[in-house]
Length: 287
Ligand SMILES: Nc1ncnc2c1ncn2[C@@H]1O[C@H](COP(=O)(O)OP(=O)(O)OP(=O)(O)O)[C@@H](O)[C@H]1O
Ligand SMILES: [Mg+2]
Image (cartoon, rainbow, N blue to C red; front, side):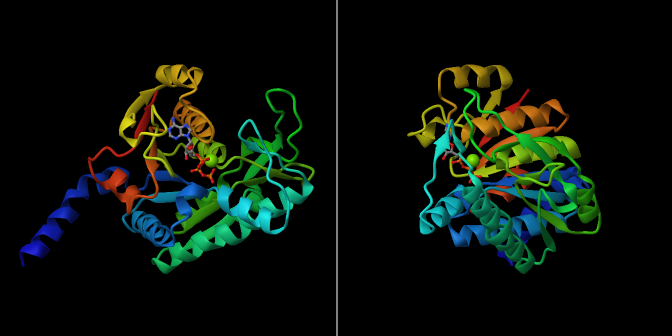
């Protein structure tokens, strides 16, 4: 009996959070690097399904860097990066779209559905969701089909959420000419959260959060402001894949998203812990 009383207590402890987030939109960026463990993938999908059942509107935007790199290798296509962005020639773009909007997207959709949710996979082309233009690299270099988002037509997300479904979005965008653009998943998540005026934006990644020393998980920065972020970027503490996350947090917070978190997607139920408990996991980015 004691065990069940304890379980009931845990449920009741979640009540204030369930009440706070009822009907609210939470955008979850699911990083490709946090997806590597199939057992954890299943738990993450359960967390997302549960969020929907208790009345939130989870919207998943995913990455897939490692999966794309693996497929390119199988096809003997070299992966090249320029300032952290994947140089995307025609052949690479084809693979990026196949993997992101194809296998990875459908894998996440299937797992959420197996957990009892109703997930619908989309790319930025579906419902005209993401429009992009060519991104010119900071140094003027040509990085091919890498795009930057110019508009989010979020109607399709609202329709799906309103119908009890969970949108799962692959960050592939289009433009008026029907061309295909590879957009960064973090940037897409930030733009989508901003457009939806989401309550929360959560990044699930393969680090405990923002670290002041990459090699030491003990150096987790549990809360960081814009001003501090600028300084950390200048010092090179924020680098590589962390840069677009921090920038996406900025964008989202500027546009009225209330909270932005970067958490460790490799921890079982990291998402539930972040949302339903008062335990501060990962890094909270604030204005
Ligand atoms: N200060 C920092 N703290 C934590 N991680 C950092 C920091 N600076 C750079 N990083 C890097 O950022 C990485 C996370 O970004 P990465 O792009 O690799 O993953 P992701 O965005 O979750 O996945 P995907 O790009 O496939 O969607 C970490 O693995 C780490 O190497
Ligand atoms: Mg990334």
